Length: 99
Image: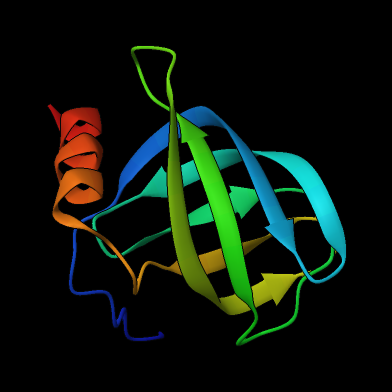
């Protein structure tokens, strides 16, 4: 059994997402999210440790821009992203997804 190293509770979701990395711009969907990070379902290619710009569609329909570091990647499936650049405003917007 593997140990879960996440410090934040994640919630399941199915929100539209757009992201940009070294290999280009892609669409995707969030599988789960927390204040610490998320998993993005996408067929776009990323590398572990790559910095990615991500936009997620909020319940209001607006797009929330985020940045983070890829923590793991599953080619053809998606990647895990650690939010290491959250502003207070971005954190507040993310908390609204959990309400």
